[in-house]
Amino acid sequence: MFHIISKIRLELYTESLIYSCRMDIINNISKSLILKFSVLIMLHQSSE
Image (cartoon, rainbow, N blue to C red):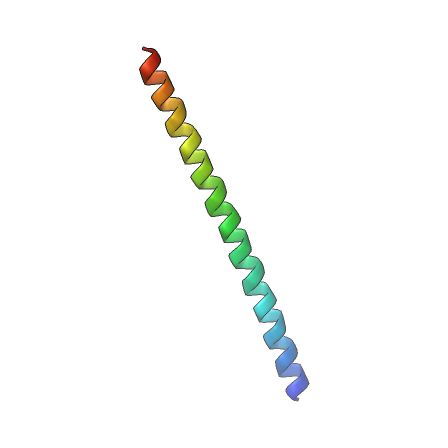
């Protein structure tokens, strides 16, 4: 019985780890995209 519980707990833990890693990656990508866009907009405005 205990073995099953620990197995489930381990799977849940790995799932949450994967999920948080994925969220970190998504956050980083969106941040860098926002940065690139703002730089592009600034460049565009300064060229006018």
